[in-house]
Image (cartoon, rainbow, N blue to C red; front, side, top):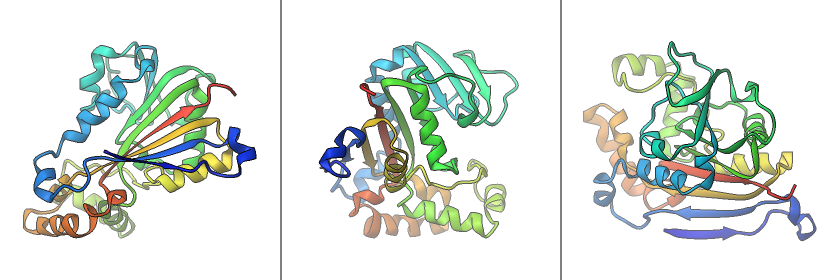
Length: 262
């Protein structure tokens, strides 16, 4: 892992209002063959980060909980204290591990400020349209010193460009129907999946965030979204364009820590 500490944003006299920002580039400098045998490693990596958070055994919020199942949750379920969920799409039977499941957007969740010891989302923020309202709400509802974790495709990766183009052309639903039924057809914006957008929102809103850590994890499984005869395109892009540039890695995780002394 390569870690880079970015200077605190803004002038020193405003240091208390600005977060410490760090970038972590995981498993860099390895050839394509190395990554093709590790296509699911990012799930375990994300689960290990969540499991290391003391807040996980307190009151936790699964943002975009869906039907209550994801592959990271399977690995941390025995470490969770009390978990709530929020998702705009209803379910017939709320998952048993959730104390409360609210069917609404995060911005409309009926909880007070400083409620949660930890909040996290798994492949969710790519569908968030408004960066500022989303981040403002998630920081509002976690306790001072608590953290929010996110994992999603990285907005800088070619997959997200292709997805947005297909969506703009009205081809996404047809793709799901005829090519890859496992893909979802929810609108994808990739706005909160971009370190630059996250930093802009935190700065503009002066959110009480003390630390931001961005983690970039190489992953080459996006070739499976293409028909078999076209997968060489994704593999060629990975070799020539993505793997040599860690900030274009397919997986972006980030951690926001709310200021403890606000």
